[in-house]
Image (tube, rainbow over all chains, first blue to last red; front, side):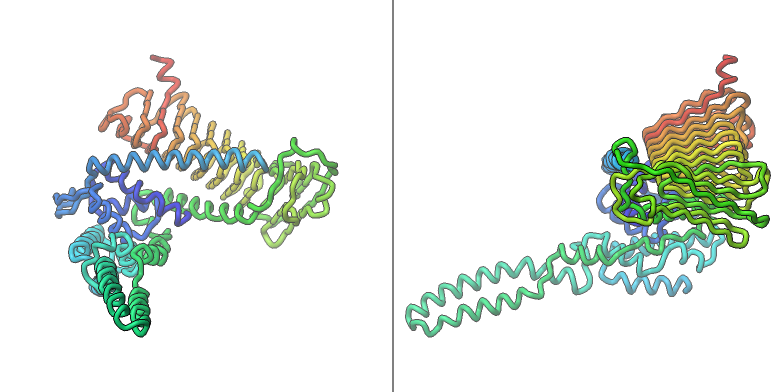
Length: 108
Length: 471
């Protein structure tokens, strides 16, 4: 998949995944990798930035497997950001789809 | 590389980060390592998944605001200088100005060179200053953290159903090749038929191949429909016919090759920048009936692709905007990629079906498969069948997903997740584990098949005709 597409959507996808469920890093990396292929390590700088910007916060808790893990959870500011990004994304993809349908398909 | 070496390399690369950022990142990566080891992976495997330290460090340095870099000589020093120096410059300029006026008043033109010199000195001091924006741009430009991210092999660790993932990988790969194919012809305008009025000429070209060893057929076309049919004859017959603008007829390429066990058919126009042309062509490929092929690959830009009665092990279809219709066919594996065309599959049998579209809709009517994998952005997915024969995994952004099961619904696990989309499950005997507005986990009996639907805004409907009639 196009690298620029991935870059543009990764932040939104991460917020969506954490919004669905609090997750620790490893678990999140697995989830993200299922839809967007990235080097797992590059997820952490993004998580750090989102945390510093107040969109995510972290807490420690025992995982289902036993050991303590650092969990990421979405803040209300993060939810706002997520909705904002999804709205933007939808308008964007809708316009691109429309462009493909109207400008491309009808003029072959 | 082992874990210790990995971390020492990473630490040395992160010198310029703030202590807190560095500590947090290293903690996270250590935790990732521990979790990976607990999951039974080797250090090498984990390192491979994480990506190389340089990529992570670059991304981290680019992603954290440079103002917060507390260590290291480059950005902070410059920021400090940049903030303080204008004040010194102003101050010294004022002092020098008054000094010069005073002194020059007293001593005439002798000292005129002095202020010039001072200004020159200041200017030369300013030269090494790099603006902060420049640094950010520089760092951002030099970072491409996903270059190492195309690691298809690692998928297999992650899923209980490796085969499904590998099909998804193949879809991804094929999307890239469709993209390349499209790019190749994007400067290739072909106007719609109705808008032009120029002289046309009939085209009829034909090739017949008698080759008993045919296993693979590859067809690519930029300006014709593709029609695959079967016949009683023991030969492969390829016919290109239709109408085309007179002036470009000589540039029409129809190339058929038969080499070893492979037939390759190409239809293209060897002419650039063609406008106002008419190209209404059909490529019919007639193949022997009931012969089981190994691999059939078709790709088309805008023409319709129609297939009837095909028997093949693997079938791969690509289209940019043309529709794809497949019926009465039997294959082990179907991969379909389309940008805007609709996909219709009817009365066919397959094991693995992977369909990936951007805006086209997917419609399946009476298609038996063990695994169905659908991925769309805005296109909808609709499946109609008497019963369910396999696992369904559908991922869409805004497209709706609808399964209509007309008779019996077998035992299934249903997992639906969405951001704003909703699910309507109209079937009996469903036991809910989670039943929220945008998240449903439910099962019927012991859960023989999996239905997994993920959308962003698309809705999911599972409808059982029999049940609703009975009710």
